[in-house]
Image (cartoon, rainbow, N blue to C red; front, side, top):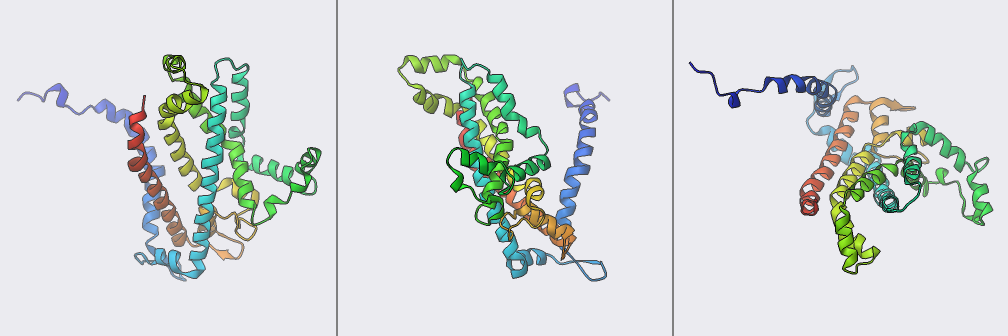
Length: 309
């Protein structure tokens, strides 16, 4: 009996190379996600035993006043947190990338390094430094604003409910603005000079060249930056925990889904941890992220593919 043609044989060498990565990814990523979803369908009794409860935990999370108020508050704050990053961080990143892509800019590599440097710092260090800077008693922010005649505008921004979330969001923007800047910069320098020269010869000014030539060609990159921002912000936890603790004060005004999940699963101070409700919150976070990713894939990416160069 003749052996199967070579093209029909299973490429065992591919399986050998993929197996280690697939095993590690399944063990440390897929299995925890699946087990978390499974745990969300159980409830625990006083003896520690768990019983299948279906969607009871999700009904509790969304409708029980003891849980729903915290959940919707965290979700609303997370949306604000994401919106600030989407508008301010990515807007500044786009502007910096445009400036750094100028052909005759001196010291561009130095500027790129300095702007990207904060992304490599520990979030704990960043949070501690900015708490010192913004401290009303011994911080340098009041003195700097007073020196330029803006001292009356300073306030304890991290200690006020109305401004704490915005202040922490802007701290995060300062730290991570280098990431969208570098991604957009890489897309801009890959645009052929012939296209830009042709537009200039046709009489287009700098703004027209950007709006009608550069921007359409970097739209796919802007889409990737947007979805990365969305996923990262709805997985955020460390900066708010480092600055405001697990209670995300004042009065939960900086509470997002990540800190809400931490308190629910592990417990904090007088709140007793609940693995089953924590798994429910984590599953809800996964659903929110999946909805955002699906909207991007089916509602945005298909439209952006026509601009891919």
